[in-house]
Image 1: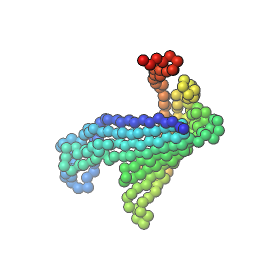
Image 2 (image 1 turned 30 degrees about the vertical axis):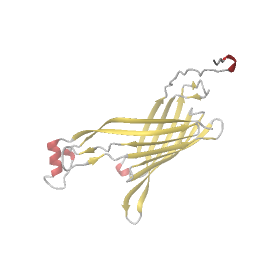
Image 3 (image 1 turned 90 degrees about the horizontal axis):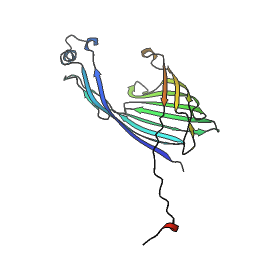
Image 4 (image 1 turned 180 degrees about the vertical axis):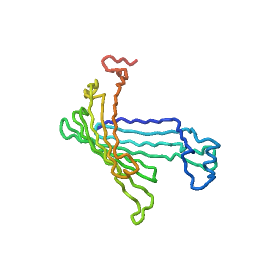
Length: 232
């Protein structure tokens, strides 16, 4: 039997949008939209909310989340502009294969969609000694529902991402005896394979994470024995 951990979370915040009307190039003179933006203001703040759920065991993990739950609308106090935050859904999962005592292979998947366009990442991470060292590769593709002549939906290979990292320090779980590395440092290199004319061909990311231990004090359950039990 494999036990798991279930987590749920939510976030509430503010989403800010701003339009610089001076940078817009109208196709005709005296454009009504630009005039309204200049007269009524081009900045607006709206509430925003997201929520998600996560489940993880020693062998696999899975999660579902949603952003822009409130679908706030931005009109910038005009009658001509109607910009709405569309709900986005995220589905993720992975499975850990124990190759031997030190090496683990973790295939991963992430799907992001607003049901007009869908992006999905498929990757493979190799971990040595429980993330003392790790590295992997991820392929990012997208499917658009927009009509493409003769072909219908279009599948595009967007990016290839290479990841390496190391774990530092050492912590032993007092209950399970499992050793983990709470401090992790990694580097990711993103190579654009589609639409590079409108994007930077490469990008770089350095990330640092640290897991703080939380100790929960629990009172031991009472021990009952018939030897010292007296029922009146």
